[in-house]
Length: 305
Length: 295
Image (cartoon, chains in turn yellow, purple):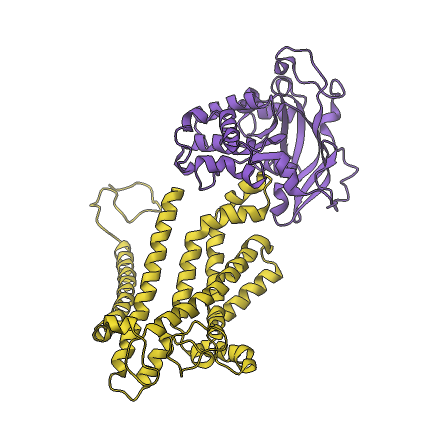
């Protein structure tokens, strides 16, 4: 209808059909464009991941056999199974995780629960962790070599664990910190108001509430560390493929280094073996991931979340 | 901790004393005693010249008042008048607020709550608190109530203690068959009563309630108020509320806080028996507030 008085909304007819008019048409087009770009990016990311997984499976599957998984390789030379490398990687990564997880989680607890907000120590620590995350793993490898291997004059699986722990520590600490900050303040207030020490509250209320996130962050850190090759090349040595549980003063065979040597070996089957080992590594990380998530789902169900 | 306010110490600090308070230890109305002869009540809190600053912002001005044993003391007033700041200062819950500093003294049974030797965990052990929003732990109903006793080493006969706490919070009959169920599955009113049960499970001396019913519907509110009447026989209760009818219904004594006209700082305007505050307030600002002229 026509209006007698000029108004702010002059230019649209309230009785017209409810289809886009004016600059709404342009705004809708922009909105659609952004939405399309975001969707496309997500699809590309999934395709990249899918391609990697597909190629690893396609190339690695022919190498797989029961013998490949449960037999040791001959002491020198190519061929044979990779049992020693599977067990070695599990050992090195597990020891590294045992070293890094308590340190990382406690660091996060310090940052969230004990450091005053915006205090110098807190900010310095956060920055140190971020820098640590950016450290090239080969540098960490050299550092641990100088620290643990050179004085002992022997490669050592434990040195490999320490190097992986240094890689995992900032990842675990930062992800745990993020999750701890998500635990509602009100729970801390409730615990404080009951006259219970903060440490007991952290142990029995705050950590259990944040457990799922902390575990997810830890699994991601473990997955990242499990594939690290450079530090292991430096501190753990490439000249052994025999199963050993001697972490100190002995090189422990492992999958990443084994992939490296297999790919470099003067052996036509080397590449196939390398793909096979890559597939085993990938599957191992996936299984650990799924296992952790199942465990979490059970925990959450128990807590009624 | 001391204030830098130059005008502070010489200001007339006790507005409530503008008006002579009856006996030395102001006795509660007879009704609150159930008709028994009035006895001089022991003061649980003796608050002297308390002021609170957050950084450079003053939140609460010189406040002097006594809180008496086994009474319900209500703290009323408009938003931002320092009600919550006041009650949270009584058990040192403000310690974690950046920039918090307190002037004056808070004496609890004669002991300075803010003395150097005072441990705030011990303070809160005796002075429990329930918050505005129910905040049960993501644990079972049983574990919520049993959590503090377990952590304080009160493990003997834990089941009986949990039942006692849930009964005194009037929740037992509703949850006795599902103690292992997550507390988060309860309704808002039930969650708040669970929080009260959790607080009384450690048998504190004082219960501080910071707007405990403001997030609840009228029926849940009524059950919480009924609870106050029951609980005051055992505990000394301080309740912050922005609901004046609630103060009139549950409280024996009422403190009215408001914003100082010039400086916009929370100030204790009047503190007296609830009946007096609501029927014959001494201060015109109190009268305006309780009759709905303001706020």
